[in-house]
Amino acid sequence: MSVGTGVLRAGLWPLSLLYGLVTERRNAAYDRGAAATHRLDVPVVSVGNLTVGGTGKTPLVVWLVERALAAGRRPGVLARGYGRAKGAALNDEGMLLAGRFPGLPQVQDPDRVAGGRRLIDRGDVDVVILDDGFQHRRLARDTDLVCVDAGAPFANGLLLPAGDMRERTRGLARASAVVLTRAGAVGDAERRSSIARVRAAAGRDLPVFVTDHRPFDLGVIGSPEIRPLSELSGQRVHLLSAIAKPAAFESMARVLGAEIVAHHVRRDHHVHAPAEVARVRARADADRALLVVTEKDAVKLGSEAEGALVLRIGLAFLGPEPQPAEVGL
Image 1 (cartoon, rainbow, N blue to C red):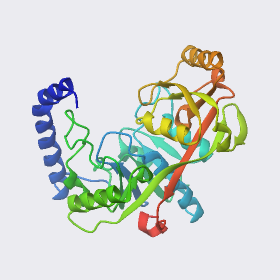
Image 2 (image 1 turned 30 degrees about the horizontal axis):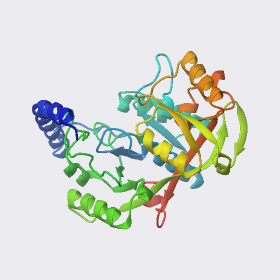
Image 3 (image 1 turned 90 degrees about the vertical axis):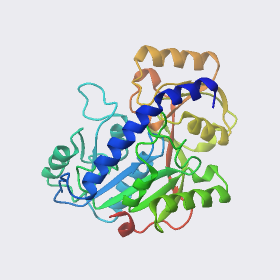
């Protein structure tokens, strides 16, 4: 940590104390029933985390939708819609889900209670998957799945705004299970340490499912074509991403054998303007390099990115895969 960063965090410390006090009082009100919760007419499976962004919630949501459909369920996805463009029905994660699952019922609304009611009023949903819902306690849920990054379980341990924690680690006591993500990037000892820290924070032998994010194929923007991952091996590439952890995207491309000439990093949920994409494409062409983007970004790119490759990833369990009942399905 740099001196400047340390000074900034020290200056924000009083605000973190206030944030922590407000958060704990709010949770205590829900715990004792003083704050009202609202239940939908179908089961709700929440996917959330303790830290701000980047723990891999979207791959878990994708996996849950896949398993729900395989089990004969009719899932719908409810989300706040953070980063959604003005007038749009869905943000980038929602558009990714729509691309993977055509016709999937989705509602995005900051008022998750009202949004959830609209979702089930459609009549074709028998289980709601609540994306980023762990701290949204106003909507009752039947299962709480919490994503924790294996390499940085609780980030720097500091609450917002000095750190990345949305609430104190003791909040894991509410979790039904933890999904340890990106565990392939750490050794066995670090995984065991992360699991022990999670269970110590929860105060019980909480179920922990160990996973990794694995690339599985390459899409092509503007085409239904699917290409094998081997096509990246030995290729010069320009990467374009607007995700919470761009380093993870870069690492995947490097492991697949790509020679990374440049990585054009934008803030998470950034909306790529056509002229901006055209400039990136021109730079890649000038370097005789392929343009490779994330699936989350691909859904926001227009004709300027046609032909660019899309690195698609999925959730892989490093151990037994949970049974549907273990994750609320």
